[in-house]
View 1 (cartoon, helix red, strand yellow):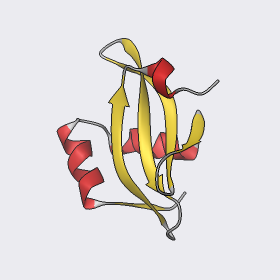
View 2 (cartoon, rainbow, N blue to C red):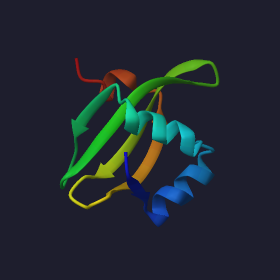
View 3 (cartoon, rainbow, N blue to C red):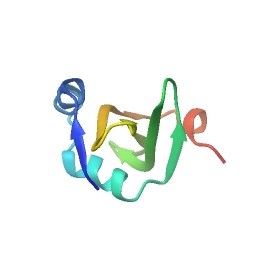
View 4 (cartoon, rainbow, N blue to C red):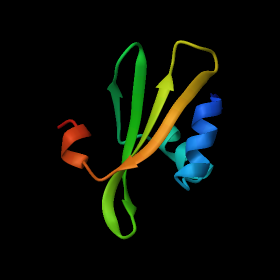
Length: 84
């Protein structure tokens, strides 16, 4: 899957110590794809953070070619974001 990282996404990867390989894995095989605000789509997959369950959420602008990752983060609030 072809994508570019925004400047903000690159900064967040470094600040939050998230590996680019983890982002690539979520984009290749997401657990879910959820529409967000303003045409942004969230690719998300369950993972672990310090041995605890969490979600890796990758916010993507799919309207561009290639798509652009606008931000990325982990959250422990699985039930808030995971859609059944």
